Amino acid sequence: LLTEELNVSTLYGGSINKMGFLGAFIIFFWYIFSLLFTIFIVNKKYFMPTIISLATLSCFLLFDNVLSFTGFVFQYFILMIFSHFNFRQITIL
Image (cartoon, rainbow, N blue to C red; front, side, top):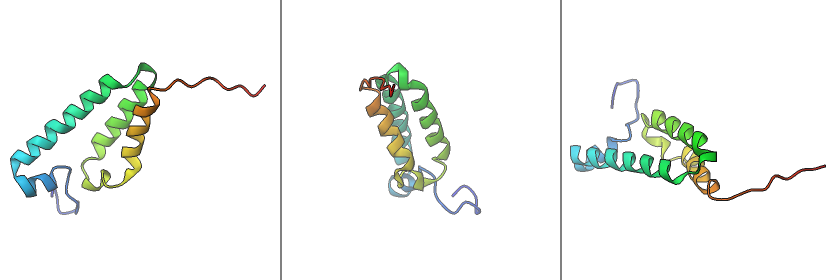
């Protein structure tokens, strides 16, 4: 725990408990790899929303339960999936 006021562990809490600092390094490098992989996959149209979503996710990884709830992770995958499909403009008139 970082401080006593924050009673939830960080992203590295579970990995440090199970594997020590080696687990923390593995999680860190896996997260950096997934960020770089995502940046190269996403098309230019959805690049900025994806970067904003990843920045928000990175800030909220101070709390471990962010990845447990699908609110942030679902947005991440939706932007990756939508960046590979072309949608036509639909006009009503």
